[in-house]
Image (cartoon, rainbow, N blue to C red; front, side, top):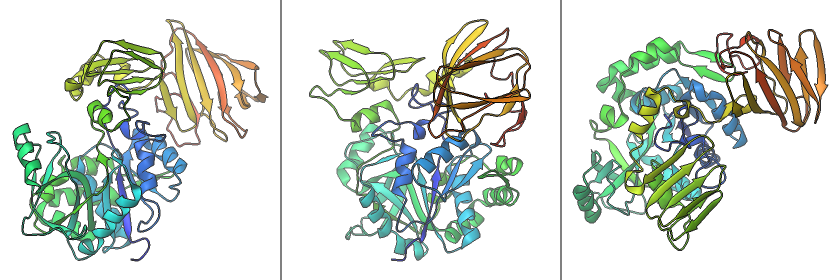
Length: 482
């Protein structure tokens, strides 16, 4: 096998609803550390390094661009190209864009289209499964990867294998059809038959093969995606698709648009543990449990409690006499639900959005390209924040119309620009930024700088920023902090 013959395309979009309150719109589940010591996105980045993979493309949302870049870099994925969707258009336009990106380099390039919010237990076995599909993909087939089911699951789509296509050493088998999420009774029949696999949403294909299918079956998607890529702009290290063209692409899944209509599909069994991490119930299923079936993370105390999932981000969570309950406690929100209803969070999050609740969108800790800030206390005329500035990073040059700020350095060293003066502050030193003064904060050191910021004034909204200069290319009209 030749090294570097597969271009991975990571689908990094997401709405952050299914694992609320840990996952939110501005910080969806792929960037959250749920299982293990790194995020699902970082685990995906680790999975696609080395043979047979080429440098990756990452297709994500503009709001998450700095999270994508930072976590990819932390994972050692240094040559990835980050392509920003102006809006979500489901998996068919994303797959079409993936094929177009690869075809610009080589129409015969193999493309591995994969979500980056799934848990895969064994990276070596994953790469072996991908290798088992390469010859079929090179021959012009679309290869889908299926998971051998271990329960009658109603939340997944299924792949029915052709009974006349025998299983041979992990090599591809012919696909008879794709099936939507079944009822429990039907799912039990699927499991008993042995002819059905879960659809993991992983596809391997020649770029030109998929583009030919789009040309014959979904020409509008191909047209608008081609225009969006041809007129894309480069913003720092990101490629921004042209919004007006991409917006016209129909919102449709790849299964509906292409896979259910073509016949040249083969399936390879993904012979490793897998989960789509799509609900708190699925997180509990894959988590390490105690003798009573409880899975916990953080400061948790249990008494006479069984089969519960408990996540404590900051406070101690204590439970007595409960069974089959999910409790997720973050700094600003607590979710308590039965395990049976843990997958029904969409309506709840929609209510939060309808009420304008920030808990639906933001975490208390808000990530920025230069680091993060976290609210500690808020009243009508003052706000206290903790701020971390990464080594070598700097905030924008800015001013505020309605608030003044005090900065106290807790650790590290920062450089402060205030009006025409510039000076350094180290631990236990502080400064004052008057209302209307141009100012900038940066970290010239080699360790993260941690500060406490005290804001005071009649209006403390994050849109009270006039931005004059920004090394991260954010426009003066951007209404996000610093």
